Amino acid sequence: MGYRILETDDIPAYLHERGHWEDVSDIHVREVSDGNVNRVFLASSADGTRSLALKQALPWVRVAGPSWPLSPDRADAEARAYEQLAKVTPDEIPGIHGYDPENYALVMEDLSDLEVLRTLLNEGASYGPETSPQIGRLVARLSFTTSDFGMPSAERKALIAVSVNPELCKITEDVVLSEPYIEHEHNHWHEGVADLAAEFRADARLRTEVAALRHVFMTSAQALLHGDLHTGSIMVGVREGAHVVRVFDPEFSFVGPIGFDLGLYWANALVSEERARSLGRLTDHADQLRLSWEAFETEFRRLWPARVDTFFDDAYLDRFLAKVWTESLGFAGTEIIRRIIGFAHLTDLTTLPDPVPASRRALLLGRELIVRREELSSPDAVRQVVASLG
Ligand code: SR1
Ligand code: MG
Image (cartoon, rainbow, N blue to C red):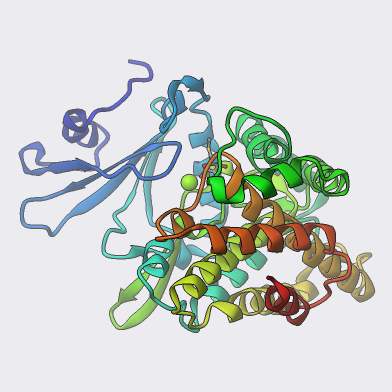
């Protein structure tokens, strides 16, 4: 039949045809699309005992429409990423019921009993002690097992080949790692930060450092990444009395620098801190970079003795982790900046009564993380930068 764009009314018959739902008369469907790129529907039975989520990739960026075409192949990348994640961290991703490559549609567990982490934080919640360690461990498990430490060389080459995701990588190379530093029609900002946007565009040193990070992103095939690990790609909640985390939306996945995943999480944590500070409701925000890094490092070191190639010795592990740390800081800086003067802004800031003071602090922090990443050698050093912001 070929690729067809599914509308709400098509979903019952589609789920039935694909063998996901028997009684078509007992499906209630609603669209809950929220991210920038795709469409998501929730299907549930009248008595609420059954539910599923369906995500479909459109041939364009959802929020821009057909004027910004984008290959739906990204859904293949997402399905592949879930396969890898399911091998190493099955409890931290949604259950996947099936992928339909013809229609670029994933059918998966309905997570609507959980909340998007960003939404909770924006409402004033704390992170709690578990979320950031879980994210750090997830990144360590995915990255170790898909690196040259966790996979035989030939298998790794095959993974790199099958995981190429050129259009989505190009979006990141553009909207995160170059456009905010040049004049571009995608860029926009609050007038209260116009001076900083102009200053950043004119800052030759900043631009060169971002170019270096962009080149790392383009060339450093360290491990399979989630690729868009911000607080809107994480759901949290309580099930059967236990805290749960679910990481979703890995459509930007490709084999790249591990620091990109950590950096995105850190950037979003740091921006959530600025929101909380400006509202006078700081809680445990300042701990999140350290907690996620420590969990990442501990888990990566725990897995190290199982490496497939012991020519990589313990001294090399130290060097490797130091490089991941430094690159994570740099990528965190680029993520903060693009979320304020680039294309896709954060509700953490845009919904503040006055977004300017928090946005200015975040921009200055982003620049420091980029240009001083080599000298900032610990979470405490990052805290000192935050403390020094005007
Ligand atoms: C055109 S896509 C803009 C952003 O939305 C996604 O969630 C990614 O973060 C991307 O950079
Ligand atoms: Mg997304």
